[in-house]
Image (cartoon, rainbow, N blue to C red; front, side):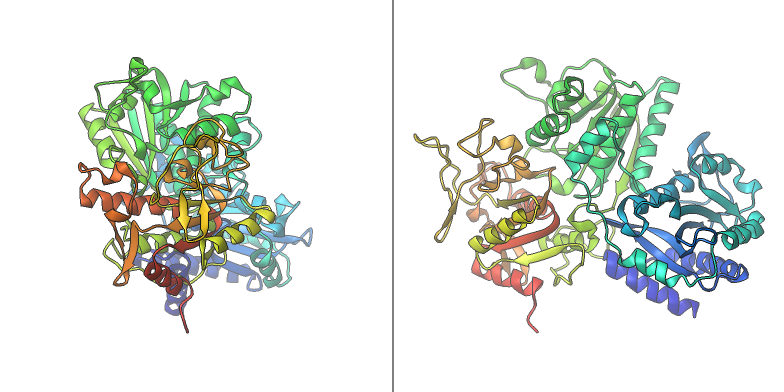
Length: 616
């Protein structure tokens, strides 16, 4: 019975995440869920519903081990108890840090205190699920260390109390049973479970609006699992570096929508409130100027927090306490500005950034390296840290907040483009697979660019944001004598302009650096540099002749590109291939709710249509 249940659970998890379940996870389910089931039976709570591996709203990569659903014994209202199950026999605080835990025998040096983990799960459900609207008290959190004794995890109890989370070990097993028995009434739990499962999920607040509220002290990002671990790693590194009067370097890696910017913004809020000298820098004009204009507003003090990588070319050692280097994959070999020599350096740019802060934090996605000369990689950062004899920490993120939280879509795109994955059973040699669908994210293949534009126009009318992007496969001319944008992107009878090249408005078209979020940007076709790091409700992607479907796979075509940075003789065919695939990865993962595809090449268009809507 247990084997059949865990096998079914493993299959369900693989369908939801696209990842196979390992033997250790199967053992954890068998041991922990058996212990929980035994205790529920002894408590006389066979009638309550148990939601196993309940996925967090907007992020299927994070799930609560179990959510117990029933009715509150005293109030009669729905009650949801989030239970984090741990098999630990013992655990202690890591370097006396109450928020980090080290577990003997674990492959990880440390992990976030489970009380923080379950507290964040509860908050995520409260903020997003209509089943608990107006009744935050209906969600409670428990950590159950069913193999540990109170003495073997003694250091963990204090923080649990601070987060209003109950922590039980096998020493308190009878107290755990009594606690549950005292919370739940005698009514069947399946109706409460159905209300939670079938209720409305509150849409994610747009990143820029959320970031603005966070920086102004009106909100916080709820960080889950690896996101919280990344935050705690940085916090601990900062405290340790100051205590020892030394430096630390932290690198946080993850794909589009994995929560890198959310972690970065939460760090910026926390560190500035702690009175640390903190700056937030990127190598992207579009991203930085968008943050300055739409996140900080007219607040000059907040605006000064946002810098460019070049701004630290000649910084004094440890001029900053904290330097958050977002979009670090865009780091260049060296900082250079021919008009401002003080923003140029003979040293590697990554080395300049490490030099500039006591704790530099790099956020990057190597699949978003889209231009020759971009050298921001995990290996490069680790190498420079070693050369400078600075301790380096790495935290990978594999969550998914964008693309409807669909891990399946992210993996589908990687397979479509032949990009390997660190955490799946396949690599870049695996062929594309049909899109099996996901209720949280929609993929559409339009019959023409005009049909794509019509679909996206309808989404705009519904209140979504929407933008169209394309491969750089058409000329890009400057405005003529009439000061209007040339209609360079021509596909049959359909013609549209690229986004403005300049930092000034051209007619109704916004400046290039705010095209992605400014009113009036929908009428132009965006390039990868104006879209990178940003997001829309719906993304339209025109696949040009630089990427073709041939023989069941996507291949790159140098002759189809008009991007002189990619087609110049110093760029090898291998580099061109990787950069083109990366640029389409960026374009295809900008959408929050859906993506509309159209390929100029007929064979490629047919291939996409077959993958997305296969014939019966």
